[in-house]
Length: 224
Figure 1 (tube, helix red, strand yellow):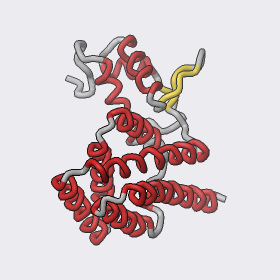
Figure 2 (tube, helix red, strand yellow; figure 1 turned 60 degrees about the vertical axis):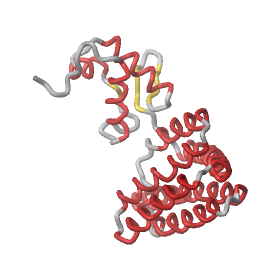
Figure 3 (tube, one colour; figure 1 turned 180 degrees about the vertical axis):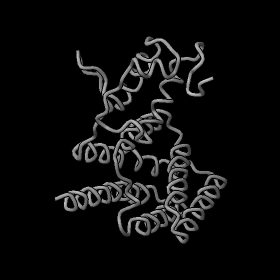
């Protein structure tokens, strides 16, 4: 039996999740035309649940539906990244501010433990490990902030950021810079200084955008 085939009773959400992961891994790179017939055959499903799945991905900004031309994996421009990171900095800044007021002692202990993982990964030069711990730290702050609408918007914007062909931590010196920024944010949280935590988080997010821009500029110079 073909392991990639989806059982007929599977919901369109499962199809959407499989396609989402293929997009995030760049197996389906930005700009790729989505061959509906081929995918339907590969998954062993009709085109109806596939089209429903594509509508879900379109609502998340991961694919673009073009009349009479079909469906394409969204290409994200430098301007898109500027705009998304600008919004993200405000949203994650609000999470940090709200967390200083709502965090319990147990929450702060958990954040310290995650930060220890960041320190360990940075010392080992483990970019993948650092990225995972970084994601856990931000997600924990979002959970502590306890605003499901804020979390929903942040998750959707992070999906769009994943369309970028680059990873900010690969910019020279960014891992060390990010770690220092996390140290400052943690100290502001422990001090229950909401205004400082918000300001530091906004700076942290925008620093990540600046790192992506440096990578993009270097690629342009290398290709010139």
